[in-house]
Amino acid sequence: MSYKEILKQQQPILYQIISKSFKNNKIPHAFLLVGKNARQPAHFIAKSLICENDVLTCDHCNECRRIDEHNYGDFIYCNGLEETIKKPHIEYIQEQFSKSALEGKSKIYLMENIENSTIEAMNSLLKMLEEPTSGVYAIFTCQNLNRVLPTIQSRCQVIQLLPVSQKSLKEELKGDDILEDDINILSELFTSYDECQKYIESDMFEKLKLEVYHFLDDLYFHRDNLIINVQTHLLKNFKEKENIQLFLNMLVLALRDLFHVKHSMNLTYPSFLSLYKRINDSDENIINKIDLILNTEYLLSTNANVMLLMDSMMFRI
Image 1 (cartoon, rainbow, N blue to C red):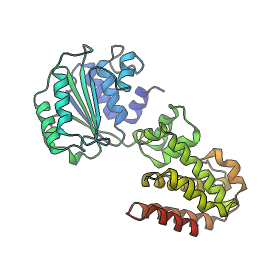
Image 2: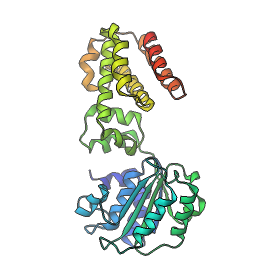
Image 3: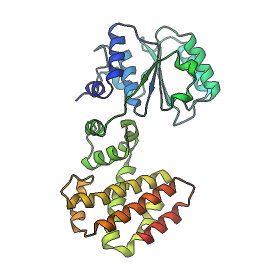
Image 4: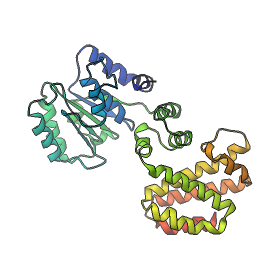
């Protein structure tokens, strides 16, 4: 299924608005997409602005691919989650777009998570929007509309994105040719494709999945190795608290699979089936383990010491 068809199903309001705008050649000079899953729709709009093969993006021509790769000459991209958007970012856009177009088509600036901007940046951006230049288009995304100046909102076509269902997210992830385990895990833990994407593109996710397997194997069959392996592998290789929290949530899904094996239900980790079949544990013990892990994950969201919390969990599990 093409992304255009996926978008039509997942975001019918967005699709109807942009389809009508492009067909009637009445395209707003600024879009503001609100929601967690805004990256792909934002790039879809950007590609539609320069694609010559179709009214909306064909998604496979050279120009469309260059937008995806962020190497199109008249396309500027920034993300407020990677770096706070500041006034010099806006001044750079103004400077670049004051020059002749490199590609001879639309000039586009796409700013994700615009709420992570300084007030000076927002005021500079507002001046650009108040005096729009023909052929220059702005595409903004945000997760918290309340943190975007109302005066900026009023000068944009604001579109609230619908949350993506787990089923739809799974279908979208299948298009990336990734493992069944990964599709199951990502769709359980995240609610948008954008959140999943950074793990799809990183081998860190595969390493964490392997740590989950080793943890279960040690927990049930090599108990004496559990603490030392966690300390020398997991905690040594994954120092970010966010990664340890992800590991714990992935571990909960694996323990939940032990129930699913007993009742012939679908597994989150089908590749772990041979391990699961060797494990014999009561429902009560599994529930207690899950509760302990979830409590540890909750405490990690505070300023508690990671090493001490993990040691405590392993002694009690």
